[in-house]
Length: 254
Image 1 (cartoon, rainbow, N blue to C red):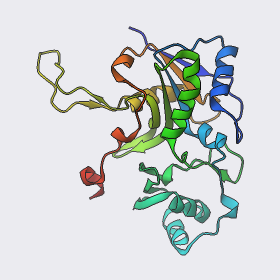
Image 2: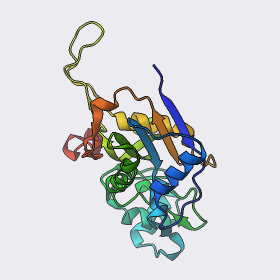
Image 3: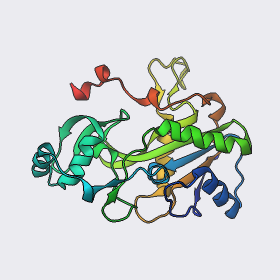
Image 4: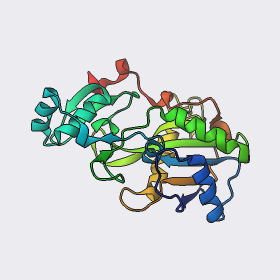
C-alpha cells in the first residue's frame, strides 16, 4: 500500500487573471509528472485568491469604533481587525491576539481566515469568495486532460479547539465527497461502526500541508496519487458543506 504526494515546484508567483489550471499543467509538464485518473490536486487558498484578484489593501481601510475597541483587546492592527469584521458573519470570541469568527463562507476560524503571508507588504488575502466554485472551475478545465475521475481540494491552514498549532484543512472541493461516512462497516472484531465519519478532505489537506509549508517553501499545489478509496468517494457534484457543523449542533458556541 502506497500513497504518493508530489509537490509542484514550478508554479510562479500568481497575479490577478492567471489561470490556475494552466499553471498546474505547465508545472506537471516541467516536472515530468503525469496527471492520471484517481489523482487529487490540493491547492492553497492564497493561490486562488491572488488569481481571482481577491486582495485587501489594509492601508486604505478606515477602522470603525468596534475595530478600534477590539484592537485594544487583542493588540492587533485596527485596520486588519476592520477587515476581519467585514469578512465575518459573526464575531464569536476574542483571544489575546486573535479573533474567532464565522466567515462569510460559513467557516469558524481565527481572524476570518485572512492571510498576510506570501503577499506584498500592506496587502492581505481573504478566503476565496466561493472556494467550491473555484474548485469546480479548475476541475472542469483539467478533466479535459484526464477525464472526470479527478478531484480538486482547496486548502487553508487553521487552528483547532483545545489544541495548539495549525493544520491544513479543506475549504472547497470538487470531484470527491469530503466526508467519509463509515457507519455500518465492521471493525477488526466484527462490530458494526455506529457513528464513524471521517473528514477525509481535511486529512488529505493536512497531508499536503507537510509539503506546502507555511513560509518560503514555494509549493502551493500538491498532487496525491494512490489514494485507494478514491472510487468510493468520487463525486463530481460534491461541495465542502458536509464538513460544516450546523450551528445548533455546535456545542462550543452555546
